[in-house]
Length: 71
Image 1 (cartoon, one colour):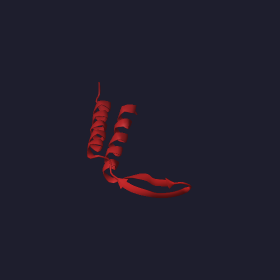
Image 2 (cartoon, helix red, strand yellow):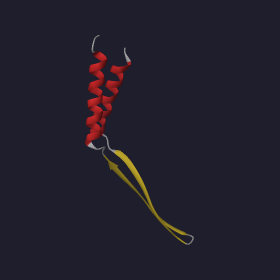
Image 3 (cartoon, rainbow, N blue to C red):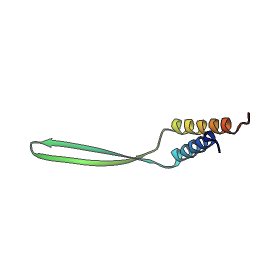
Image 4 (tube, rainbow, N blue to C red):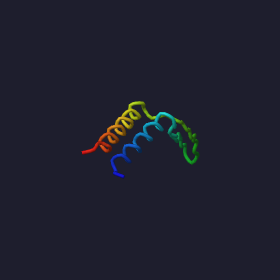
């Protein structure tokens, strides 16, 4: 099998997953006063921007069409 259709399938899968699976994001907030430290760690689950998912899907479709087109 050619490489371009495989890349297209991979991009399609990643595009669909970008709409479903949240990406974890960790932040460390801290403050130091002398020798004492006060800190808080927060965790957010953010989705990728919809434009990123659309670009992945469009790239996957384009790679599939170009890869499966017979010369």
